Image: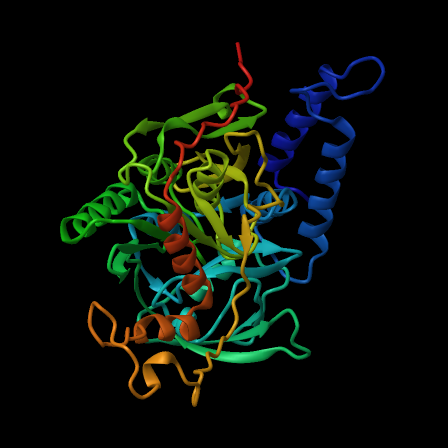
Length: 437
């Protein structure tokens, strides 16, 4: 039998629904379906009475809420107090765990991207890997929050993951040692004199400021002729930070807008007219691990023709999640809107298609050993500027073998610099976001 309190609650719900049912039996917006609520109450009672183990009413109701959200999409989840704390940690940049950004797909936890320098990255985990087991516990049927809870733990503790990888015939095991994950949001360096590199690992609250500082410090050392913005394996993060980063390289204009069912889901975000590089060429690197905020930046710069997007198609997470508190210790992270690029493209399940596709590969260079040039001939005439051969750049050759995508981005930057920016990029025709009264 149902507890008397719970029975009264369920009866109150069904009774309330019956009073507002229209004559034809269709359920109008804002009304509760009587028959489905009766079915829920009956299933609840059957589980409570007949299940092999005794489970209290509050736990069963939490299971029901979890299942309801899991059925919506991979990113809507029910947050317990621990899960909500973990969500806050991910935006501040430090937590104990494996260093994985994950989502739910077909009932399995799927890797979106490993975090730079984390145990997961060092172990070679990739975007698209499916986590089949955590220790001896199968992941199938777990909520995303439960799986994340198992992956978190004290620094120094071990956990074995069973991984299924697309293209591999058999799953494989990998043992990871949990660590304090400190996400260095922004890194910078020179690729060659005049050509700068900025890497964003995750969009945190201060990422926009950090990128601005990085560009400024690089510019203090040398003139920036071009810049590679590396967003590969960046799982996203804070929306406002993505707007700030895109705006650094734009001369104003729309960065992104959102649309949803409720009025407050409609919003647009504009860039300040700053362009820290004053029109100098930018190449943005993306791949399948670039999601959410990364795609906002890439999409905005692509639509405004401010950067060349290079790499492979991005992840395609074009939805907005809002955290809605429902008690002092519980909240719901619910998908409430979709992102759209300035030209009105939806990112959801489509991703950003690069302007130039470059697959990650291992490249080997071959020297022209034994080849003869004019400088090798006896009694050759000396160059009027001196008789010295131009030395090849060993660092660039190493870059080609270590990271062919970054090498291609640098090569393109050099070409763009040679050609020059012949005309200022034109802003795209911007569709106005839907107005809500």
